[in-house]
Length: 349
Image (tube, rainbow, N blue to C red; front, side):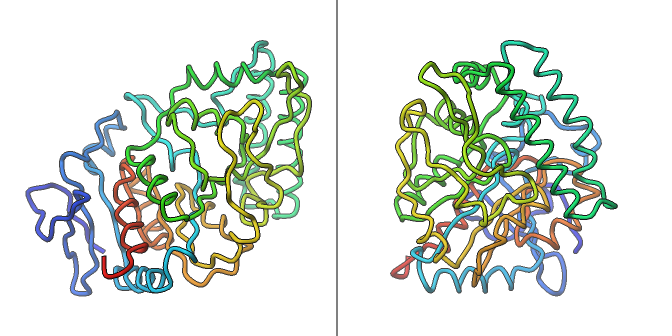
């Protein structure tokens, strides 16, 4: 697919989301362009900034996408669930010209020695996570080993819930514009949202509280859950470990409910069994590995949305083949809001 960037060349139809499309071949594949109001305004690497300077939505096979949208719309929102990655998907990749922090690396313990030890684990195990020569079974054991050691350091270092609150308060982390509207729209229609993360549910929960200032009863966090004593000291972890290689729908039964004592967020009404019966999926992620988040669900229709935040020139081809829709340049969530409105439309609206 050929693609052209620059607003001087845009033609096509304008939508309420602020997106336009441009046919780029005889097969009518389309590239979607955002209006200037949606431009990425935060710092980016100069090489990419010169070539991909606008927030762009790429649809490689619009016919396939329209077919999936129609199939999901025909049976209604009662059969739909949304599966979403957290870091760099719900959150921005760039924040005020700086690389935004992830929920994994924002945590700071009172004793910086333990932060250093966890960083050393990252430097050792992270390359193994992406090694193409290590068999999956062996890699799974390595990931369990990594997570186990990291969790042990958090306990040994005397992590408290107050540490989490302070870490989040000072973190360089923001949600994409439109996330609140997306969650609100889905909550009003009873569509469950599963946030999958190999990190720590308690941190994500605190980020939602401090950054969004709103709770959503349809949202469930599928991630590792901490157990604190009455004084707010971390004493253990609950259930089986969720890591990068088992972050999928198999992990739903491993996830604990939101805290009702320390969390302060309303408990979800999402029922695990009912979620599994929702066989239409909207999946959002920023990594090719996020496509595996729906593993374990026997879905009928799945629309996948990928956020390609960096290394666009080298990664666009593989992303547009892997995902139904790809957003570039740290795009806001408005395009997804529009997509959800289309697949949840009923009664001719």
